[in-house]
Image 1: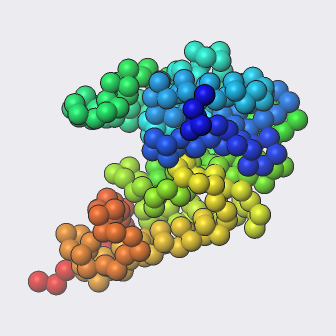
Image 2: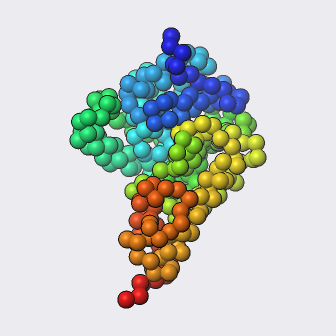
Amino acid sequence: MPDDTPRFTEVAPRVWVAHYDWMHVNITLIGGSDGLLMVDTHGSAAEARTVADDVRRLGAGPLTGLVNTHEHWDHHFGNATMVEQFGDVPIHATDWAAEHMEVSSAHTFEQYEQDTGHPRRDEILATTLRLPTRTFSSAVQLDLGDRAVELIHPGRGHTAGDLVVRVPDADVLLGGDLVEESDPPFIGDDSWPLEWPLTLDLVLGLMTDATVVVPGHGKVVDKEFVQDQRTELGVIAETIRDLASRGVPQSEALAAGEWPWERERLGSAVQLGYEHLPRSQKRLPLI
């Protein structure tokens, strides 16, 4: 067996994380007396088969449920494979994520149909979509036998349908893509940059100083890391508000602002920020 085979590592009692090089995705297993809950399933059927092999190699119990932290393909394209490999287990997500998964996936398939040179193109296009089967709006508690796990929609941020997973007895929180370590969080055309900092405030309120935080991508972090990321996102949101209130047009805002991240990452943030601002917070430029 190659030394670089991804393996699940226990980061807290009966909570295991496997980090995969492709997109720096994290897959998490939460163990209870009734079995294992898997949070996110990776970005293709082929990659999900590798994850399934790693689950069996861990040998910590049967897989009894899946969670998708949001509707982006790299977190749920492994759903169908997991059901094929482990049986028809329930798949949990927010109402929003489940309702928008088909449209989001169609955009992904279209993108890779056109990208004929991408090395993962055929692998991604060979994936079968499987949608969540159990959804919720604000919060739900899952019973793993001798352990309760909480799924919480803390507000809009990376998408409108993000959830975080809290394992209270182990003091672990899985942040999905509301928190990223491998790169700054991705602000895409379906993100909510003005609300994201307030959403993270609620997430931070679920933590203690000792909480183990598993981001959607990258290394395991802590509460201080999340606080720092919240501060950066807050600076972005307040800079957008300040520029708009001073009458700086959207077309000039990216160049005019002082930003905590590279400007190349913030085009969507500025566009969406201006779109989401109420009229009362915008000032017409002087002519």
